[in-house]
Every structure is written in structure tokens, then in C-alpha cells.
Image 1 (cartoon, rainbow, N blue to C red):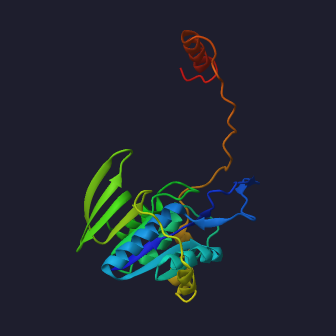
Image 2 (cartoon, rainbow, N blue to C red):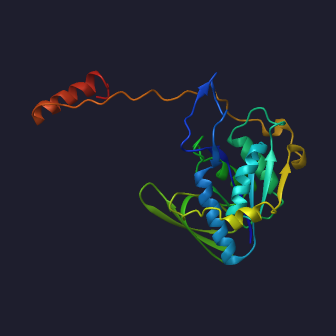
Image 3 (tube, one colour):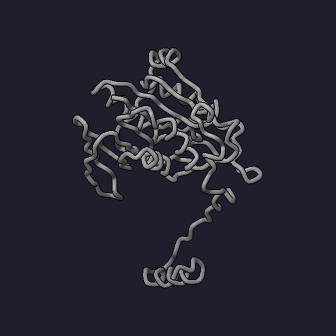
Length: 257
């Protein structure tokens, strides 16, 4: 089975975000594999181990992403591809990333493509579905279970507190939700093997793409941190008095009623 995983390099979830001159300051920040992409990587490994085949993990970004790609190889992926856009793309959005990935995949004949449900930095959840649309293949998002039988996949997806069961034919793109599996940690032998696994680097020219082909469809107007939360209020007195005070506060301060 020919399996591809779409991976993004994101801020460590423990990292404190600093805004400087309207941009996120990345100096000295720690980066990791997007946590939802780890579920995709783990599921790809389990499918490969069951049905055979090869896993290629793909990332779009700069050379700094090589570290996270090596981690994916150490987890068990077979090879990695970095599409380096540092010198070719000044501004990008989800369309840009999806267009580049789809162009890379269009002649690779994938059977299964896995991605994280969302990236913890942007949280749009657009890249996976956009790639599937560009490739003209079916996709299912927020999956919590995946079973493959021949050329058919049965998928359970999370629908806000309930489940939906979907059958789809391969090739198929799915995006992984928390609960799909428990991602493994890279083992020492896996880390050593990862050093010898192939990691190819491509640029837009290698995909016959020009900068204008991947121009973003959106523009970031402003980046800012959310306002600090104020201390809560504790209502005193009898229950009836508390209810009256709460209604007053909701009307005069929160202005929600």
C-alpha cells in the first residue's frame, strides 16, 4: 500500500507565544510535530504493518522542518520529503500549502493519505480537504477509527459528541482526531535507523510551479494575543439575592442579556 502522511512543524504546546512587530517571534522557540499529525503518523504505521507497503511523510516549509521529519522517520515512516519554500514563497496560506502538496502527489498514485485534523497554530483544518479536492479523491475528516478491507475503507468520525460511520473507496484522504490511537515514542533503534532513511528536499521548480501558482487566497491583517482574563466574582448572600445580582451583572457588565 502506498501511504502518505502530511506533517506540519508547529510550536511546542508548552511554548509561550510572543508577538513582536505584528508577527509571532520564533527566536529561541521550541518546535514539534503538530500533535494531530502524530495520530496520522501512528495510524499510517499500523496500516503499513498490517497490509505492507511504504510510508512517505511530507512537509512544506523550510530546512528547520528536517528535525521533525527525522522524528517521523524514527517513529517508523519509511522516507520523508521536504518541499522547501523558504526562497520561493514570501506569503502563504492553507491554499498555498495544499496546492504544493497536491502537485507533489498528483502522479504518486497514493492509496491512502493521512493528515492531522487541525494544526494547533492555525486551527483551520483546511489543508487535508483541500488536497483531496485538488486530487479529486474522497476524504473524511476527524476520524477516530479506520478499517481497510481490499479497496474499501470503513471510517468512524467524530461529530461533536457522537459518531458517524462512513464507507469510502480507496484512494482516500483522512484527517486524524484525538482518540484514533496512541502515538508511539521514537525508540533508540528507530532514531539510529532514521539517520539512514531517505529524506529528499524539493523546491517549487522541481514541481513545475511558479510563485504566482501558489499565491495565497487570504491575507493576515493583524496578529494579537487574546486579552487577559479578569478575576472572577464570587456572589454572596442568599440564593435569591445571588440570582438577582447575577442577572444585573449579566445585563450591565457582560451585556449578554
